[in-house]
Image (cartoon, rainbow, N blue to C red; front, side, top):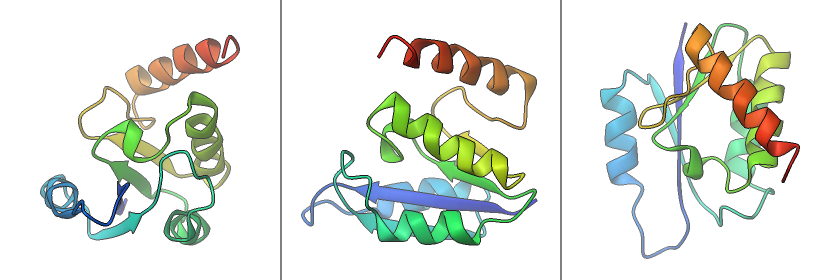
Length: 116
C-alpha cells in the first residue's frame, strides 16, 4: 500500500521542507507540496493527488490542518479517498482510517461536523 504525502504551507515565506522530511520519514514514497491558504478549497496539487490516488493507497499529512481548515472540508476529502478505496493518515494526529481506532475518531469528527 503506497503512502502518498501531502504538505501545504500558507505563504511563500514558509517552506514545506520540515513537512516533506516528516512525510518521508513516515515512509511516503511520494510527497507533493503546495503553497496555498488552508481556507482555499481550490488547490491544484491536492486535486491532482486525489485524482491519481488508487485503491489501497494512503494519503498522509503531518497534521490535519495541513490538509483542511474546516471539519467539513476534511470529511469531504476523506469521503473522496474512501470512494476510491484509499485511506487517510495524519502523522501527528490520532487518525488513520485503515485502523479501527482511526475510523472511530473519524466517526466522532463526523458527528461534531453536524454541529458545525
